[in-house]
Length: 117
Image 1 (cartoon, rainbow, N blue to C red):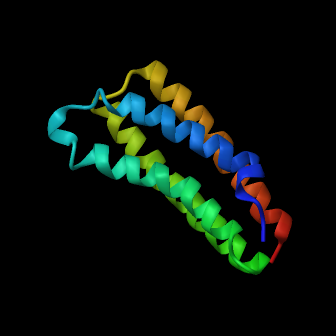
Image 2 (image 1 turned 60 degrees about the vertical axis):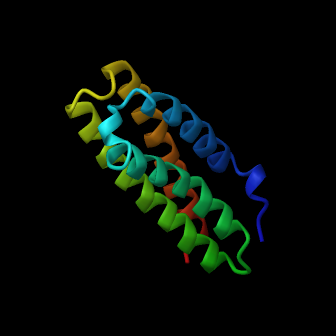
């Protein structure tokens, strides 16, 4: 088992989720149950799956949940692009979130590859 609170990728995912929640408050109110809700769920899913995987008994299970977290990050990336295209988010905020998201994705890929299961 791993202590998820000590994983840098989990910390970064928590920070980005918090940052995105603040940005997504600016989305149109009619998106509250659409893009806003779906994007927020994806963001929370990244850190949540890292934590859940860390609590599993085997490295294979841990890697499986890291892979789910990575998939959620790609899903969120797609939603972020849609939000940018619809001008729900500024280019500056988009770039800030996207850069950090890409960093988290790379950290997850590296961590997954380190286990080489």
